[in-house]
Amino acid sequence: MRRSRQRWLCRRWPSRKEASGALGNHRLGPMTGPVALPRVYRPLGSRVVAAVAGVSIVAVVVLLWVMLPASSQNDFGPLQRVVIAAFFALMVVGLYGLFRTRAVASESGLRVINGFRSHFLEWTQMVAISLTPSRAWALIDLDDGTTVSVMALQTADGARATRLVRELATLIGDRSRFDGD
Image 1 (cartoon, one colour):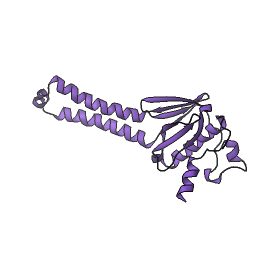
Image 2 (cartoon, helix red, strand yellow; image 1 turned 60 degrees about the vertical axis):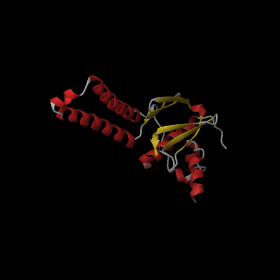
Image 3 (cartoon, one colour; image 1 turned 30 degrees about the vertical axis):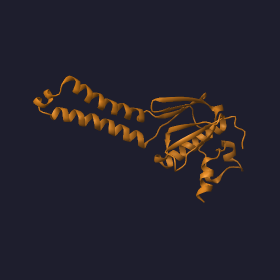
Image 4 (cartoon, helix red, strand yellow; image 1 turned 90 degrees about the vertical axis):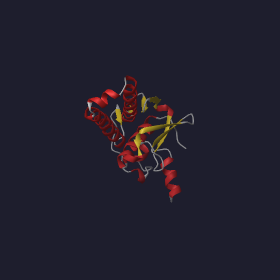
């Protein structure tokens, strides 16, 4: 049973016509209607974690610095202050990269932003999208045989991620030149 489930999750998703007609797959559930473009896909859980962690880090560092006695603050030399500030700034920048992760679907294609890397994929390049429980995020299969990770669609978001992957799969199916198996 596990093997058949994995094969189903990794196969090409049907277009809206296939899913709504007699050839539709009952496992996909009902399609919700046309998707208005541009459409932005963002992870929920990781954005909340990144925002809370970033604010917490800044608040704790500022609070600890203010609570230090003036004599202890004066013990830190300029280089030590710069190193400490750079260390915490690096942590906040890393969290910002996680926070800004998204995928933007437009009429011309899909812009995937994973941290600080950005990929633009035309609809005709995309063959399929898959999201399996064993992977942290979705993968888009391209017509040249490569894949692109889409960190905006994460299994940690549960049913929400599944719904968004189905929505994006519908867009890919409707706009892709892929003719079938």
